[in-house]
Amino acid sequence: MALGACASAANPGLRARQPSEVPVADGIAWQQTTFVGKDGTELFAQVWRPAASEAVRGVFAIHHGLADHSTRYTALAERLARGGYVVWALDMRGHGRSAGPRVHMERIDVMLDDLEAFLTLIKSKEGARPLFLYGHSIGGLISSLYAIERQPELAGLVLAAPGIAFEAPPIQAAAIQLVNWLAPRAPILKTPHDDFAAEASVAAELDRDPLVAQGGGPALTARSAIDAVSRVWAAPERLRVPLLVIHGDVDKLTAPSGSRDLVVRAGSADKTLRLYPGVQHDMFHDPGTAQVTADLQAWLDAHTGGPAVPFAASSLTGRLKGDARGRAMTVELDARVELPQDEALGKDPGVTSGLRLRLGLGRGGAGLGYHGGLDVRGGVLDGGIYEVDAHLAGLALRSARGTTLALTGGAGIGGVRGSTATHAPVELSLDAPLGGVRLLARASLAWRLGGDEYAEDALGLADEASALVGLRLGPDIGYWSSVRAGAGPFVALTYRNLGGAELWGVALGAHLWGGN
Image (cartoon, rainbow, N blue to C red; front, side, top):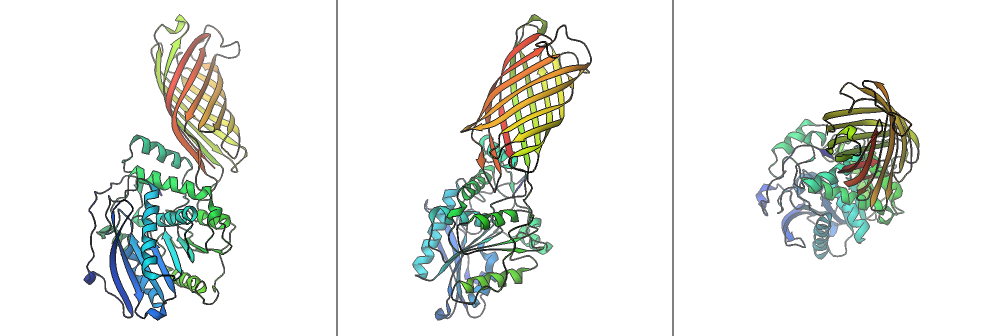
């Protein structure tokens, strides 16, 4: 999943397909139908079935992903129908011919309800035939969450490049939360067509396909997807149906590491991971499609009375895309009002705003690693000021739940002593999750390197001293694999001592943190 500029289109309503638009291969019967979601939204579906009903082995239900629709699965559907499977495929709401605002997903539970209505329709038409559910990309996210939380009766679940993990900084999950709170319709969700397959023709077809919403979706869609990811990883052991997960190892949109981790943690006794070298995100339109299709059909046949699957499962060990470990990042924006307690800094309150960045690197989870960053602040304090502190040297002790105790130091410039004054800051900080909030605490000392001198020392220890204690509202949440992230507003009390002149203040702002 990538962040970028895009736009979401309006709701075009249900767009019906004409039979003449779909050339049907010999020996295959095709039909289109509509059904309604729980909220009354009209949804489109189509069916490919073997012409001879006695040849049916099972039923295969397809749930596509973003920038996609059911007709793009025609070749796969015809192949499986010739192999004895009835293939049903829906157009997800907001996609293809289904009604709904384009690429608009306000709550993931609406998509689960749509999937349930789709499977109920299939069961009413197909009776007790073995039913397999297939989900690709965000359709894989929805299908896996549906299987975990609603425990349907399925003969098997097939996930193709499921959107349950991403090759992205952990803080991206927190950023999506924040943007959604500030501007839920901001166009941030992007699925670049060039990343679907190695063949340029695939992107060209997507670019000109009138049933593909060009651009992507709003922040609320990204937030709903991220919420669903969190729910999948909260209980992967409840995934107990026979499971096949297939993924290209060079996928740029979803991380194959998530597929591996899901197979490892799933509760099913019958679970297989299949990785395809050189295959990208759109697994049935990329080079290697024939092998992917053959493996899928072999797995289905093995679960409908056929011979055992003839291929070996991929290794569950080794490094994969999305496996970046040991990264933690904090972004903090604030506005601060400080009241001087000494006329040396004037009588008027100081008003400043600041940006704080911290980056942690290590082996992942608990342990000791690098920690450093940058502080930038500007505003009015006894005249206009700016301050820039580079904390380039530092170590932190991190816990698996996201507690960070860090000691950093470096060099800074600016402040009340003048724009060219320099100093050496050292900071001790503690960030820790406490239930539904996050504790922010830090204390620092700084020694003059150049510029005007202070009249006194700060606390008899250094030229400057400062402290902050606050709370960020909102919990840290577990996302894919070991990733945790959180975002929210924060409030803090501040203290500064500049050469013996004290200031007490209040800071208000936004705090984002993500780590693994």
